[in-house]
Image (tube, rainbow, N blue to C red; front, top):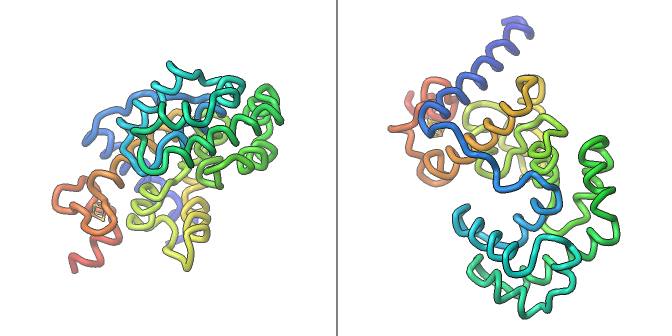
Length: 235
Ligand code: SF4
C-alpha cells in the first residue's frame, strides 16, 4: 500500500475508533478544569484514586483553602494534608507537593504561565515540567485542555489502548513508548481541538474500564475489528 493510502487508513481507524467509543460510553462531560495551575493542583492533590474521589478532594481543597497559589502557599502543611487526606496514600507528601507547586507558580507568575500555555507551547512545556508530577504526558494534557496544542496527551491508559490498536510500539521504556505513540498519531488528528479533547477522554476511559493491562475485556469491546492486539490473539 502506498504511504499516503496507509496514512488515510490509519486516520480512518483512529477517527472510527473514537466514534465507536463515543457510541459505547456516551459523550464525555467537560473536564474538571482547563486552567494550567488548577490542572497541576488536580494532578498533585490525590494519588492513585479514581476520578470521582480526585474530584471530591479537588473541590474540598477549593472550598477550604482556595485554588490560588497564594492561598495554597500560605496554608499550614498540616491543614493542607488534612483537607486532602481522602485522596489516597501519603497526604503529607501530597500536601508538600502542593506547597512546592504554589511556590513555583508564585515565582513564575500565573499570568506568564497562562500566557505561555496560550501562545508558546515550547516555553510552556519547559515551565510546566518544573512542577511536581508534570512530565511530558502532564504537560501535553495541560496544553490540550487549554486548547493550545492538538495531541491525544496519552496517559498510561491511553497509551496502552493506542499501542494495542497499532499506533506506536511498546518500547524498552515508558518515555520511548510514549514518544512512539505520540508520533504515530500526530498526523492523524483532526484539526478540531475539541475532538482531540474528547478522543483523549474516551480513550482514557476505555483503558481504565475495558482495555485493562492484565485482563482486557475484548469480548465486550467495540474496537475488536480494528485492534491489532486482539487480531494477533484471535488467530
Ligand atoms: S479488543 Fe481488547 S485489546 Fe483491543 S482495544 Fe478492545 S479491549 Fe483493548
